[in-house]
Image (cartoon, rainbow, N blue to C red; front, side, top):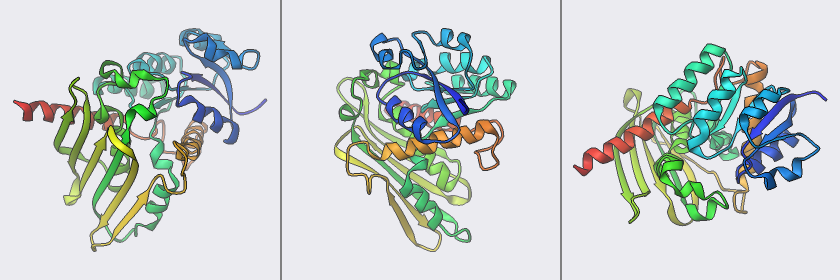
Length: 310
């Protein structure tokens, strides 16, 4: 059987989108799964290698790459071990809990000359790719606004770790901030944080935030995040230097809950496979979308909040 042999670590709520993509994307196939919960492994028994420890999965061999979709606080350990084993890694955002950890992982990937790919699935959304195609090359982007609004309790399913700031890395800024920032970077280039307005609940979890960013040549961005929104809103607006405003509703055409994610994760896996196989249209030599830059923006937002509170 041909195709990149993928080991999937973590069988939580996001894993189903990877599993579906593995059935649809050419040149990839599931070779092993790993989760602490043996019940989640049961459907795969006899079909692929099944493990409760990622180190055992790596030691068993027979893999060409690893996909990591576990709680955020486990990203660094698992990615580190896979990279040291010489395996390309696709990891759910955020890359790690802290920028220092992300820097460590990036250094190992560079040393071992293997891809380290952060899965910012929204960049593969059909409305976003359509928006990018409508932006004229000759007209600069003046500003970008990204809204990422949802009620987090409706999205986490059985993965309640999302609601634990120690495991998630924070609240809406740590969880949704990286996806939103990746869209800003994709459309207008890298930016630095200018200011952060963060609202926390009685338990101290950031539930709403507005991040203002600044880039080269006066380009600006605004990210609006909400974990307590009644409903769901995921959209982006781009203002061009000539005053034109273009937009994309990432949920348009996908009326069911989380339905847009199916095609987005096909895009994630297809680009990761292309990167591993060295195809020329992949994100770049030895790397994928920049998860480290997003971590730095998240940390800057929390630092700015603490300074403002003094």
